[in-house]
Length: 285
Image 1 (cartoon, rainbow, N blue to C red):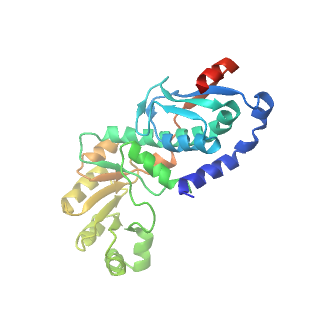
Image 2: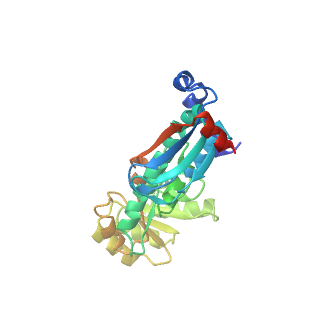
Image 3: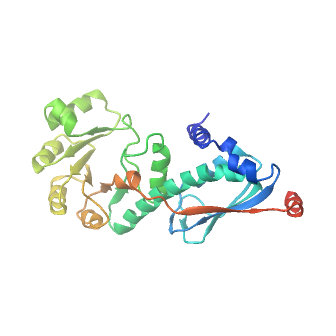
């Protein structure tokens, strides 16, 4: 069973989707209907693929016509998908499908907002590992849908030397050398909080230098100290109000934890319309 399918099964079980007492009480067992998911706010979609799988998991006879897809821009009133099927099943899957779509679309939209803020510079917007436990893969896909790039997926994807690692090793030099010795096959990034640390790191040529909590003017000065062969990243106290200022310093990318851990959900809704017996018969044909 795939990771995504496991998430869907957990979410449907969490919501008791197979014991929807409200629908059992108010909707006839064989009642069919249509449903539309529409946008109630402007943004970038993500989670459409998993939402499609949610409906299929609950009832693979539900017909789905998707008009918008992951990465698409939507405006208020846009129809994202039209559905036809057993009305109880449509209602049982509704919240799980919308939860995925609204959360992930919020991340894609937040990412896109930052990408627009730094457009026409050579700076990319990167995510972090500040993600919801269990949802990292989907949230990082949402960042891609919003036009951003992914930092390391997990602790095994690369070596990021932060202040605690430097403290444990004794110095930046010791930490970088230890990482080189440990594994030559994955990239090494080191976090620097001062020009002295930047100089020390440059001397050992890691793949990436992360400038933590530096002002734009400090980042500009650090840029002159770091050769283009070393990717330069900035993070800390960077928001929409100053992202462009940082991007114009010549930094290669900006890491923004907020695009995953603090993105507001994109407002979407699903409304149903019951079909009478004649309509249902025509739909079958």
